[in-house]
Length: 277
Image (tube, rainbow, N blue to C red; front, side, top):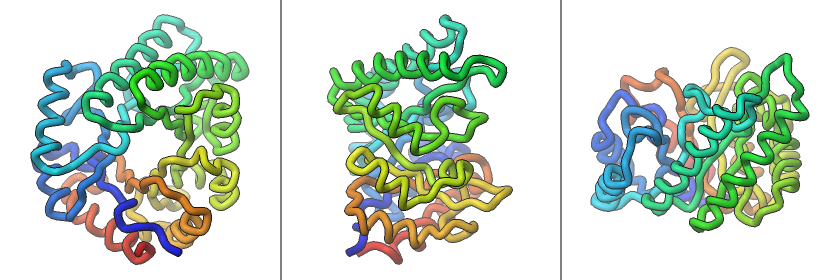
């Protein structure tokens, strides 16, 4: 048993030095009809776009025959933090995600991705967890009213003091206890946390609904699968073994592949397609 070719999707993470139309044309050249949409400048930054501007993006997607399977707003480089002690910032961050969900609904994306936020390194991390849980419940409840699944991602401790392991994802899913609140695996976050891939797949079980599929070395991250030290092919076989039905996104975040993003995307596809039907 193998994963299906259609489970490998495109993404605009490394296309942000090119226009959105170039990105769509590139997806068509590569034969991709599904994408994860990275909502960031210059393509579509959540706080800058009106509903009409979002509808214009949807029209371009429709004209290209492309659908969004997950809408992922920038939340690590910009001042967004749902776990911070400063309640003004936290409430603003909640509103940011509520607006994200409204945009995702206009784009007909079934999923929105989110990280858990961070407390101060010298603060009380138990309180940071409580603030994150309260925020996540509000955002997930908003998503539920729009028919959208909120997908929780682990990230490194410097990005999220709250959710940085699959174990913490599982704990938060159980605490929030909403049917549309699920989890995902980012292979780089898993590598940084020194977790075992198969154990994490088994732990999340049916709550595993999405995947950021990228390679890494001890000093380099967000690499094309096959270019780093991680056993990416084995990861795909493990997903197939457990009947994973979600999508895999090569999240080539950063500027490493910015000059020739299509070449990088094709290399990702060529690697992943070796392990699909």
